[in-house]
Image (cartoon, rainbow over all chains, first blue to last red; front, side, top):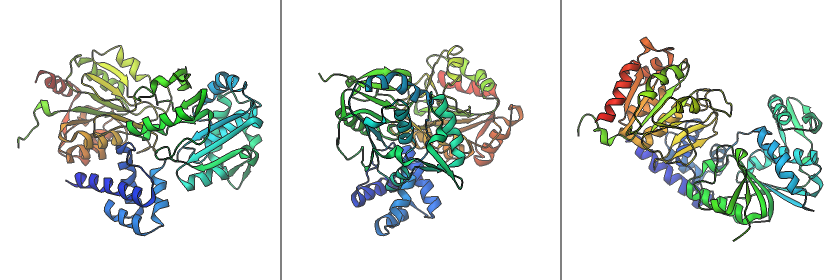
Length: 275
Length: 195
C-alpha cells in the first residue's frame, strides 16, 4: 500500500512545485523522478514525500536543494568523443559556409558540453563568428556553467575524451590548475549567453544553426519529448543541425519527418526544408 | 484472492546477472520459444563501453527476438531487452521503457536494483524478478521490492551459482524468493509458455 500512497504524494509534490514555483516536472519520465525524490527525501531527512512537500511550499531554502536532485548534474567534457569527431568532420564544414552562427546547448547543466563545443569551434576557427546559448532550468547549474571550474581529478578523463575527439590542441591550453580545480579560460565563454530556459514551458528565442541537447530527452515522457523536439524544429534554421544523446532517437516522436538523419550513428540530424 | 497469479496475469520477467552472467543466460534464453508469452528485461553488469556485445551474442543463439532496450519503447512479449552499457534501464507505469544516466547504484550502471524496483512499481504482482550469479549485492533491494509488490521472486540457487554472492544477498533481502538451479529456472519459464 505504501507505494500507492507514495505515488499519490509524488503527483501532489510535482503539482505543488509547478503551482508555487513554475518548475514543471509533471511530464518527466516518472520512474526516474520517483527514484530521485525518494533519494531526496532520505538524504534531506524527511519521513514522507508529503513532509518534503510542506517544506517546499513554506521554506524557500528547500527549492534549490530539491532542484539539485531533480535536474541532471552528471556529465563530462567531450563525452562520447565520436560525437564531437562527427561534428568536427561532418557538421562544421557545413557551418563554415555561414557568416555568423548560433549554437544552443539546451540543458547545459554544469557547462561541460558548452566548453567542449567552444574549444571545438576555436580549434576549427569558427569561434569568432559564433554565439553560444547555454540554457538550463537550474540556477545553480547555470552559475556553475558560467564559472567553468571542474575538479582536477575529472580533467584526465576530459583530456582523454578531447584527444579521442580529434582535438587539435591540448586541453591544458584552456585551463589553469588551482588547488585541485581546473579553472577554464573565460575567453571560452566570452560569446556565450547563459539563460534560464525550460524546454517544458518556454518558447523559441533565436534561430539556431546547431542545437546540442544530449541526454536530456531521456528524462522526458513522450508528450514532453514531442514538445521539446517541436521547439528544436522551430528554432533551427533551414538545414540546421540537431545533436541528441547516443541512446536518444526521433523514432517515437511526431516530428520525426521534420528531420533527416545526418550522422545516424552519432544521432546527428538535419532539419528538412519546410514543406 | 487466489494464492498465485494465473499466468494470464503475468506481465514481464526481469533478470539481473553479473559475474558469470553470459554462461548462466546461455543456459536459459536459447530455450525460450519465439512465442514466449512475456517480455524479458535484462540487466547485466558490463563495462561502460558503447558497444554492448551481449545483443549480437544472444541474437545468434535465440528464437526470441533479442535487442538493446530503447528509450520510450513499449515492451512486447517474446522479446528480450538488454539494458545498454552505461545506462540504467527503468520501466514506466504504462509499460514503456526509460533509460537514464543517473549516478551508478551499487557502483553499477546499469543497476539491477533500478530495473527491479521500477519494474515492481510498473507490473506489481505481474512481475517475475530473477537474480542470477554475481559477485556483489546489486539486485537485493530490487528483489525485495518485487516481493513487496506481490510479484514472484526467484534467485539462482547459490549452491550451484558461478558466484553465489549476489543470489545469497538477494535471498537474505527477500527470504520468500524461490531458489532454483538454472535447469529448474529454464523449466519454470517454459512452463509459462505451456500455460
